[in-house]
Image (cartoon, rainbow, N blue to C red; front, top):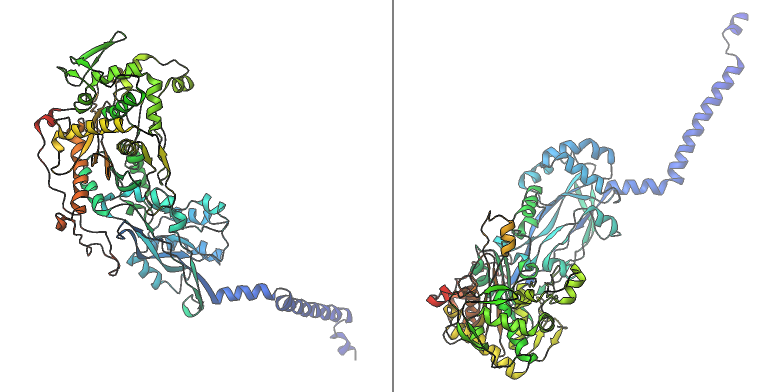
Length: 633
């Protein structure tokens, strides 16, 4: 009896064990209740995410077409790599292997993750915009051990090769982390938008609406079925005023030179061609430009990222004499028959001012002054008009202000005046400064686009249309500064003489075409600046030419700038001549074969008239007149 009692557990100890068992059962029941009742929705969502995956379908951007419907900027299919971030621990654990397998620096991947912290975890982020064959093989072979990578097909931008129309079309680029943060969900990391040119100006039209694909996946992330798919809505195409054939001629004409060329229809404001050299290949930006190449572009002394057609603010040289002639006749401050005798130099305010023609032009009136580009004649005109009268007429005809073209970052140039100098420098304007401005030197600076619009408007009798690249623009601003019929006749006849009466551009005369224009050469640096530079380098003049046809009511006007080209007659005028000749050849259907485009070279869609083609033959060159070769104006 006592032996049995000795091996009995104390009642108190049994009670404690019972309570512990009951407590553990209670905790288990509470845990099951919490999982099944309180947090059932949360865990159902997690389970759903493990079973269902949402992949974005990127909408292609709209194409850019030329005025005849040929494709200038297109898209091509590509694969982008997405990183699924539902499991942060798995991402952190596999990131080094992913970086090595995709050939992406680990620090770059980590930076992308840091920049996407504000994006919901269930949304994948793009870590490589364009997958190579090796990338695809790596993803497929590591589906089981790295189920964090997914591929999605996208349409990447394809531009003409070699920087063709690069500044006008612009380029797309990846949105920044700051843009993602401020976009309220509109942008995701890895999205692209227009950064420059038309891509930026019409981004809202060109960009489409992304779709979404929801699919069933198994435990290793492999697709086993699809639930639904919302198709992306492509961006709308835009049709431009650009004529592909003229653009090709312009690109070829300016090739190897630093400068810009703009061709306009002054009657409508349509931009028929626009090129600026040097230019980057926009295809570099279509994916993700390497830092080294971006740095090189920004540090290049030739500044290839600048659109010289609308951003090069330079002295116009003797092209400005057309504005001076118009101001002289319209103001009536100087008699129409005013003339001087040019000996090659003259004295104003105790300083000698030279004419480009060392031995002088002899007796010079307005017509001869424009045709032979006599500096001494226009020195005298400038002295008699005064800077404020010159500024008034030049400003009314469009200089010193933006043209309003539908491109971002256009520069306004500068038309100086007494008020301007007092406001900016708190100094008075000296009469000697007017003498330099009278021949397009000194403080005055313009852009090629401004000069094209101004000269075309003068030839139209004072009608200045807003230049534009978007075809069928409903609202084209028009500015009118009525120029009398007599003034228009005298000025246009003088510009006709520059080309057709043995003037400074006699070498670009075209048979059967009333090609008119004005040459110009503008100093890059003045004498004082040259002294300060210590003559350590040679500074060549910039070459200008603005030409149009026909003489009255022109259909096309072309402005050409060749930086450090020295002489407008030899460096710039032939380029404008080539474009104008191409315009008339095409218009009259002459030499039709030279404008036949090989569409197969870069064709993407066989049903589309893709103008990414073999460049056409350059129009036949013309021998230059001996007189023009010697002319510097």
